[in-house]
Amino acid sequence: MKSRRHPICMHRRLPHWKAGLLSILVWRDVLLLLAGVAFAAATSHAPAVAVPSGGECRMRAGTFETLTVPSQMGPIEVQVQWARHCGARALYLLDGLRARLDTNGWSDQTAARALFAEDNITLVMPAGGPGSWYADWSAPTVENGRTVTYRWETFLTQELPAYLASYGVSPTGNGIVGLSMSASSALTLTAGHRDQFISAAAFSGLLDWHTPDLREAVRTITWQAGHNPDSLAAPGHPRWNDLDPYLNAPQLAGVALYIASGPGLPFPGEFDSLSSVPTAVGAMSLEAGTALATRQFKTRLDSLGITATYSFPAAGAHTWRNWDAELTRARPVLLDALLGPDPTGRP
Image (cartoon, rainbow, N blue to C red; front, top):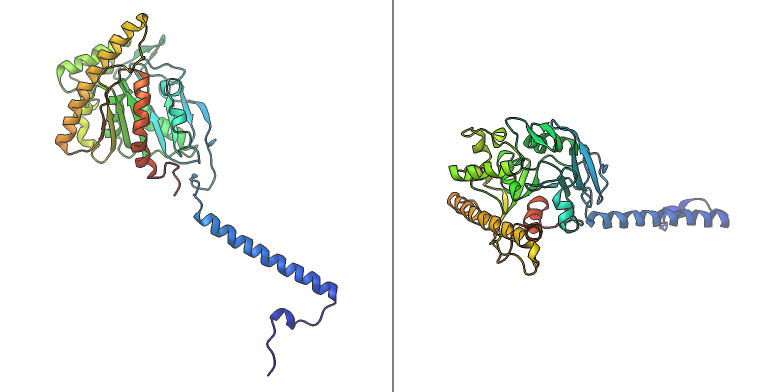
């Protein structure tokens, strides 16, 4: 019986140097093959980086920059911290009554950027809109010396998402956070745009507008911000119903909600000088009022069978320090809704 040889040995005998060269080439191919298998095995278990369709990351992942975004209101400055690994989800952070035109308070008054620095979501922080309630207004108003008709809902739900989509940010499946004035905005925008927002957080807000006295309070606040409240919506206009979180609460079923308000008591040492007394009194009284409205809103959600995560801490006034602390507490709720249990957003 003839012995069976390895196929390599079936060739005619070669000179020693050629045989050695052939052996080297064969082992090179074997090692390359093994390396390829090992690499495939390793990467098959490695976290996948989320990138837009087509496989190209179109954002400067993990960096911070200010975009100038066109809108019906004119150019809007929007500060963004791009997702750490090119993820498609976004968290919109809305400012308060005294919003500045050149920066967003979340960016320069809190640790929000550091808090989400390693997470695979883009922080979207629009500047401007003081006293606007982030709504589409019925008539023009004056902002920083210029006449403008606010179209903030249109900007946040149409123009800005379309602009960010060119960077790979999804227009759907995102989160939104509001404080003070924008707390109610975060909830009503979510109620009206359920595809865009699947998670919402509201800190220290007037969440109950459905009675005449509360609507008059909102009108007074709008006037204090320098606007004619009739430009937002005339008394009795149906638009008031659209802006009322209490009336729109049924549309929040299924949303990952985080609702918070402090009792109006400042943190130890927060106001420790005589000159800060007027500021302290204002911050304490405002927060005490929003705490009442927030608990009324909780009763409303409970009556509808809608679940939410609530935070009523022992201390907290109407200040950025309070909202910074609440954002830290809200982060797991927001990330779990947007990314699942892994905050890096990787499978």
